[in-house]
Length: 203
Image (tube, rainbow, N blue to C red; front, side, top):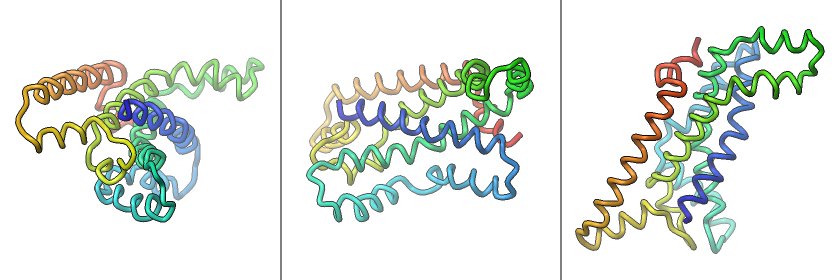
């Protein structure tokens, strides 16, 4: 249940921050655009264990929390940002900007043009980003290792279980999780395409 809660909340927060960031990056002409983009993608470079240790030392310990769940959600949200920015950016790279301009020329306000024209065209990318973010958060182990005081996640429980001995239940659970991951990856590939996910934002 903790893994589910963390994955859902972190995915929502990652999209809430990442989608507007991707829109701003796609529509801006700033010279520092590439640098800002790299900042949002940097959590993919920093080892997750290092990020978990930093959150543990800078937030969990100083705040003397009895339950590290808020810090755990924050850490997972940081990890989800690159997925939201990258996948949404891939969709934006293939978006027909003239459609929103046409809507505004026909009298639609910028807000209405976004929700009626741009957002529906972005839905496949946002959906794929949500799927990838959810499965990444749900299966995360390195970041969560130091941030489970007061609550624990499924991967950590499985790790502790394996440390105590070999049990067919763990193999069965791993198979189910692996199968779910493959299904989600297949849905993301069919919806947007990994070539566009990892290359589209640079067009």
